[in-house]
Length: 223
Image (tube, rainbow, N blue to C red; front, top):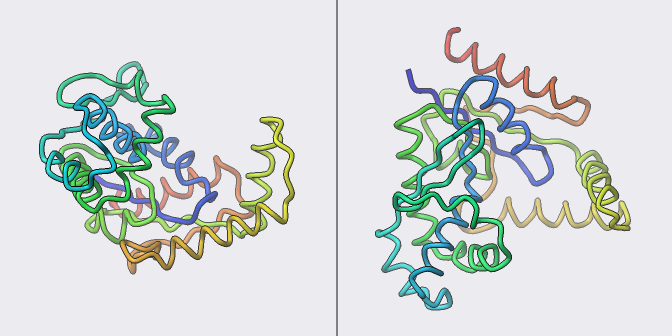
């Protein structure tokens, strides 16, 4: 059987961290959608396509195929048959990914690839519109959230570890602004899918959230 788990929610809710742990525990593929946008960027850079030219970018989207595989428990991103994992984290690729991500044709292509991947293997995918748009038929949908205060404290701890001095109030304001933009954007806004389970992780640890989602999945899958 092939199973799909969709985890949506606002920024700072811990979606990626939890999704990776759930995928590892269940033996599923974690689909890193951000890495797929970076792979698209590598394609356009290699082709010498001007990413400011939306028409040129849109015309070439159909020539892109991206797969995600795992080797020795490490994610490998395959672009048109070539492993490009080592190239994904450069500043040039990151900037290019941000530039092309705004184009509807790029998003449409990546959603198609994500859906195809989910048809072939069991996946855990996280984002803003996975359950409501990308994996509408996922057997298990989670809307993972936490209070603004909690998410701000988590973010502040991360920044302090990196030696960045900031204010909790500034972080809270940034998170609130991001929530509003995500929930009110024109294309695929952040919403809780009708059949998604609402899970507030404000007072839960990582292990507890992971175990809860696996329990919800097992119940949905009749395990």
